[in-house]
Image (cartoon, rainbow, N blue to C red; front, side):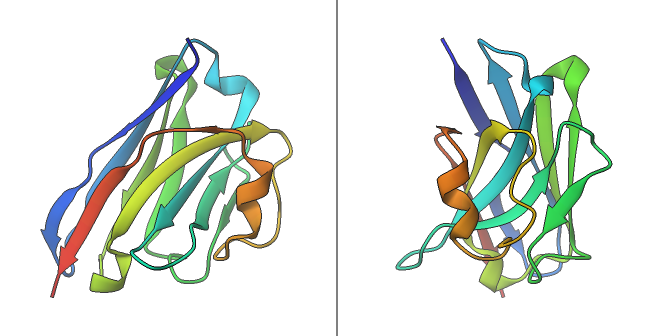
Length: 130
């Protein structure tokens, strides 16, 4: 069964950090680009970060650039999103998803990359208090 499972969300104070994990099962993650998305209440789901099959190729939305880092560990079939200096505006449900390489190079920080991604996890809640 093809599955993506996110974990690592929680409630933190502004300025603190979290590390999200996306574990793939039923397929080899190293053949796929991985994106992280988030959806806040009443808003569209936006793509915030992406790593291609080459882990040195990454894309970020402007709102998270410099604070979030996407990475992958193919030996563990897992992708990560390291989130530093969290802000209340980062509060959302965070999802990981996969697409064939190459992933979209533009549109990160908007909802545009959604349509390129096919397999989705169930999401993990991140809440940042002031």
